[in-house]
Image (cartoon, rainbow, N blue to C red; front, top):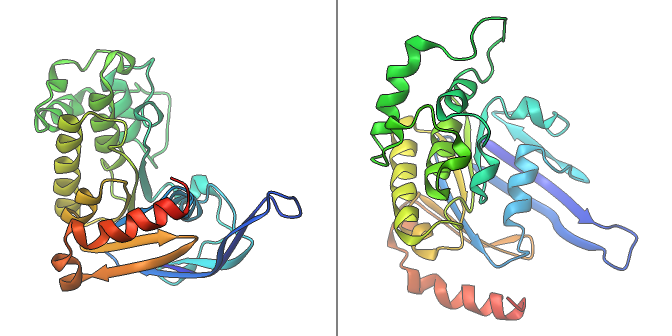
Length: 257
């Protein structure tokens, strides 16, 4: 279980730009939950992800994973058990390296590096089969530099790399926002398949209300650092896009978005 307890986070303290984003914020996420998070710009969605991942510190409160306090744990240590896919397809891969080399790096996450080869030839067939399953032709481009791929292909590769090894949390930060509609559908279908197969606890921030409704077993709507809608289980299944569209539009207008 992931627990955020009494989290307080202020930006630019002591200046005219001081903003208190989170004040006594509490959130529990059960193991295996797939949580979709929506909200207007500035509502705290991405900041919440950054707090979980350790990218930004909190002013007070605590972050617990299965009862263990990780509040002061460094981000690179947390990332041993976290897979994260960003909105920008270029952030999850190395463009100057080939697909094979990128996959080899992801495959070795958390393992010791010696003076052997960077790529394990015995794993090439497994990589090829994994890539073939997404039907984007990537299995025939193992020796192609990732920088030559389309945004959708890179994002698909980033998602596969983030989930190659066992992880406790999958963090998706608007991972389809920069993609065309057709490719976004492919990436979302792959996301749903991976989460279901690996039973990994997943937090997905998205501006696509349809994706938020169709995917996951819990839905949060954030506003001014608070979860103003929190539906799980059967309540989540009963939600339709139009049920949350009015609230989303209202708070977006209030925020000038």
